[in-house]
Length: 361
Ligand SMILES: [Zn+2]
Image 1 (tube, rainbow, N blue to C red):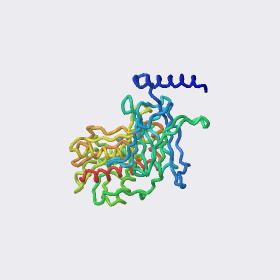
Image 2 (image 1 turned 90 degrees about the vertical axis):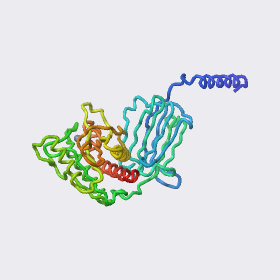
Image 3 (image 1 turned 60 degrees about the horizontal axis):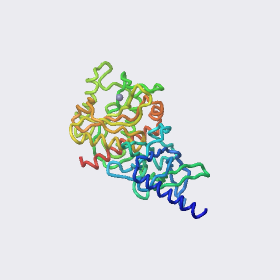
């Protein structure tokens, strides 16, 4: 290249960067989408890893990415926040569940547009989201392999917990209420599955895990039946469930398990409800919600206050969880899947465990 030409280019580059520096509004925001999940990789030394590649249509500065992991209530959640980035509009899915091959690394991931300027990707890891268990870095555009600029998330194997056990619940008395039953089917799925069957299966998993962990578990029902009786009013039926908690001495918490439903098949995600009798109700709901999202990897719909009978009338901290939407075709399939039922049960149990540990209740 001739010297004059180079100078001209340099001047142009300086001018260009100056224009961008003084008027950031000129810059269109980048878009991001997950382009691949890969469990077949190995880190140096042959350690297996799970790689998530997030493709961006333009490079992002290192200091526009922030990575945050762990915390008391969300110890397995890894958050990657990107400034001036939005989701690719083609990338319609908000929540991703990883397949069985990824099980010992991560359960799923979901996008959250934090405000108009930030995009957050949350990865529900299997291990604690702490240094040494993951690595986040950028990769330049790879023309040869037709790959865009990427943010790479490497997650290392974390299958260290004994399957089906949690700590911190020994000696606790916990009421588990599988939603609906008997003549009350609950919501009906897109393909015809019934809420009452799914809630019972997940609840039985919860019972098994909590008992194996040393807790005393009281089930409001352990088969397909109405708790009060077939021709009861809603209040009679729900009060019969509340009575299990109120009449069992020393009951610590009450947890009701349901599936969500909506008239549009697109609605999706996991949510938890509580009634604010004390601060503990809210803390219990949040802990269970975090546990379910970490394990199930579905979209985090958060916790909400609501006047559900069982939450309002139980005399102990109570939460009602909505595992996922039975009316969403994809989530209905998941809800019917034994592995997902187990993971959601583990999430609920880990939430309960974290609640006791965090609150000292
Ligand atoms: Zn329900």
